[in-house]
Length: 231
Image 1 (cartoon, helix red, strand yellow):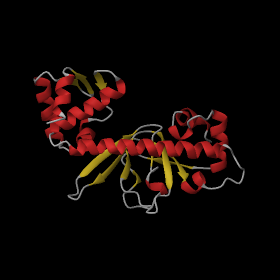
Image 2 (tube, one colour):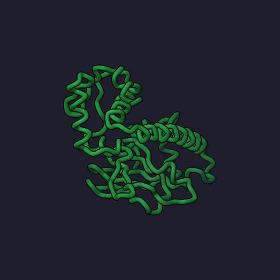
Image 3 (cartoon, one colour):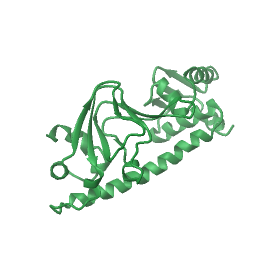
Image 4 (cartoon, one colour):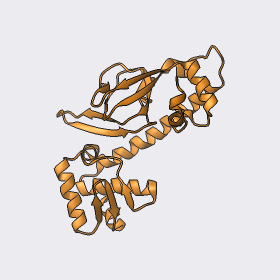
């Protein structure tokens, strides 16, 4: 049942340092649920009870929430192999704070929290690895959330764009950046309007700071990007 997803699961941080046989044995012990979702359907909705960690096995989905004015803000885009729900699932308030929506046909594997941290009747050694990997994921997530706060503290649209591009550059060490978000998703992520984002990016292109075509951006003046984040 799980064999066809092994290539994806092997790349998922939750199964770090496990081989194919170990993953299969672990999944057969935990017996997770796999669900399918059509394009634009909701995988989970903000406010709903949520007691499982989700792994996106196939497709793409957005994690979003509404601000006080009712505006939709995209927090992140989930790709194949990404995990969601790992923070809230262990909280005493088991309500999902954001909405996860399928952007195309998706298949999701759900691991119940009780089976992740509970005692294993078969005494499988793989459970210890699973718990250690989960702790590592939570630590990395905490660091990522801290970075997102930085975007909120930047007042100008140019500063937000510059900070985002610099972050992408640091991860890839390449001035030719393939953006993981489309223009609408990027606008939501940076908490700006789509027209304002496009207008500012065009200004930056005209000033020779960046160049772009579709979802690819080329950094031309990295010093100016750095300066923009400080204004």
